[in-house]
Image 1: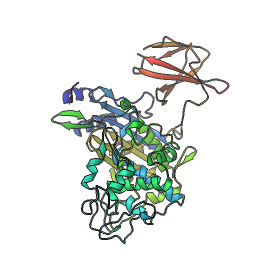
Image 2: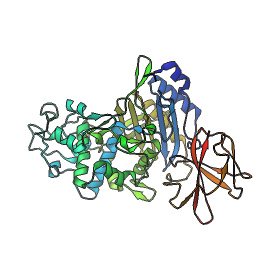
Image 3: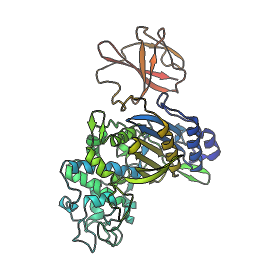
Image 4: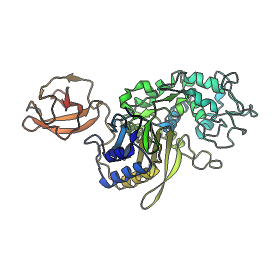
Length: 469
């Protein structure tokens, strides 16, 4: 196979939108065209976009290629590396510990660490959790960080990475490179390693591996079933390949990870991101679950250091987005890694949030502006938060007959069944289909494997795998 994809061929396919049928409740051709135009200008091979409003998804659409080399399209179930958006999840975990009283955001982190961490020249000054969450810890991103990468996963643990970097006896410790010449809490300097240290502290304080802590306390309560910190959590084919644009061609990077992973290695799909944003818009609640209380959400979305940096909250920061009629100050975060650019932002006053995940290195802010502008014009349908686990636990597999299977046209089904729900292979709802005279028309759906499901009078869920060829 070729190592890169010719630009002209890419442009010919670039406008193909591949959102799962039935998922976008408010399609808009003009917005599609704008996003596709920005992708071309910014050399972005694939993107997935989201608007949530009043507790529900009001827009979700995907474009381009997850893997140009193998002609794999982006879908709304495509998993993307989030890069620094990951930091708001790490901050959420730390805030959960503060909420339970396990830590105080303003106490010395050395109360919990197995070795001392101090700023050279200011060893008597405490580094606090709040410093880590506001980039005021005086911890720098030193050159040793480049040695923490692995393909597709890092080769050392988070604990080993932190010890190597921060312990004075560690092989990567450097008083000159790893720290600034300022007292903690006095200056702002964006720090990836400070966020990695925050993740490690979650691990130490909770006694649970950081990734597993997030699984149990954030991802599972929010039904984020396609979210994980490590490449080993996924089938490689599910994950968008990062791309760079060189000499008019797109060239993929190998999938990678890094041992300081709480600062940027989280991977997720756009509908999982929807659940997370809805929870923040709803003061920490999602359906019957809660990840934080309203006071914790309010504190995270409050300016923390206005005299030093007037946009910084706790991990979240403010960004100005521009609609056709107004400038909106939104809370959010962006992310950038090799072959990756991501953004998510919330306008709590209008109960709306947007997100853009891409596998290119361009700027997404103009897309964010347009998404917010369109979202403000929409009215939620009143369907409520996305439903978790649409296909229930009490289900009967292959309990009814459909034929022909595979098919690319009409399938026949028991005519006593009045309607069925069509799901993707990963369990995402596509739409409910009415059965007419024992027939269902599947002609409009892309090739692939799906599930048909219906619930009988006893409440049992019947499920059948089908193939559209």
